[in-house]
Length: 139
Image (cartoon, rainbow, N blue to C red; front, side, top):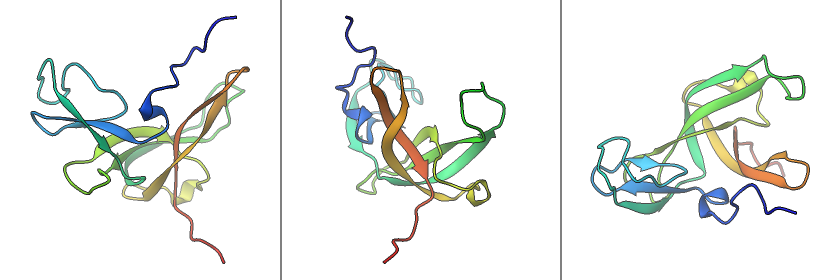
């Protein structure tokens, strides 16, 4: 029996942990890179920053034509998630939208990140973040 195909100990897999370039302030998620995408600093020095769970849709697409075993329509979005402490710039995060009606989607819509199962590879669940439009709490 082989080990897991997915490296599951990375903090980014269960938290919205991003990396801020110390040279220019660019925030990347989910990976810390050796070179900053914005300023080209190499090797770059990054600081860990926690992202907020709520952000704003910058752009989105609704996939209608996918293989038969994938549910459609499948909306995907690029979301700006601010740093949890409100400082610096936001990180751009790509993710699936779930529990959301297509007519609720537009650029600027507020969404919340939810940690959940993305899919099951047959042996173990693969978890990550999906986004959805926040719901009012019903009493």
